[in-house]
Image (cartoon, rainbow over all chains, first blue to last red; front, side):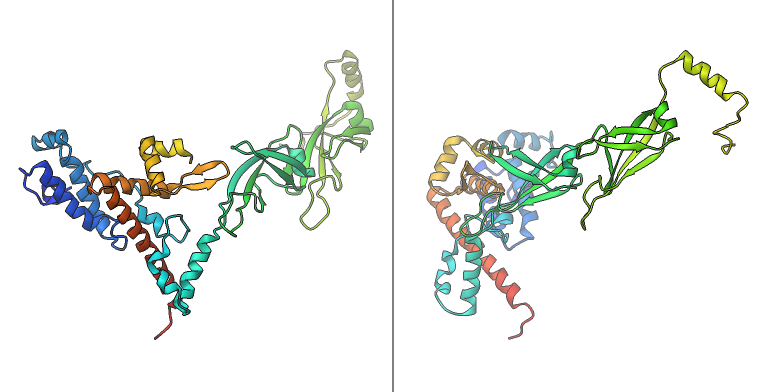
Length: 299
Length: 91
């Protein structure tokens, strides 16, 4: 950074009043809000403002003069100027069209253009509001009606469509911030988070779950109750079922986009009873003379 | 943001803010839940502060400056719009 006295164009012996007057003269020429069209002036203004911050503070100036601090770090922190907002296309309450009211009374294309801009701003649409809503896994498959409590205490009723996936965003038309004039309210955008389920996992339109079965059910087959998102159903376990055997329940999965449903995949898992001497004796007896190595294709 | 948050981020005292609101130097949005300030209000408050403290403008001066500046910005916007609309046309 340049020497602050040079930046302001004053002598090192300048009085506080001289410094202030020099700063004002420069700032009027360079301040971005008073010169909205001059982009290059901004950098110069920052330098000038930084120099003024240093020299207008008697204590800081003294320390600078005695060499205790240098001019670095004197720059003002970065911030947006008013012009950055005022010149945007978005409407704002400070817009003042009285500077060309006389032009607007006429009937030509220029007047029409000005009027159009004014109307657009008078009828500004409200802002979209973003919310987050956690739901249960089962609700994501079957659909649900949820009530969202907003930060200001009001509530919003949200209809969860069946088959919704984690991270999907629902748009509620007109439930956002109110607009101006005929602009209409913005929308509420609700990002839905599907909470993980203890039993079910989802893979596309299919869902799967693991169901433990007893040794008897595995060997001899049988009928068991299995949970689905729409309630329990009875399922036949085939004779000789094994851990990893997968049963497919048609149409019990998530709704498909084009109609119909995915499937529920039931993965069976054989669970042996706790240590049972009778079973030990039976298996010992049963396995005599039989050769069955489930790992024979491994090595 | 609400009034309390605005006072904090703009570093204004509550009496100053009341005065500026009364003068309509600041026009925050009116919503059903009370007044709501946005970033443009913060930037405008900073500018008013600079006009008064760094440039030595008095209240009447600030009034005139803001009025002219608002017109200037609107003219610039209209001009930019016009440029956009006549792009590519020859005269």
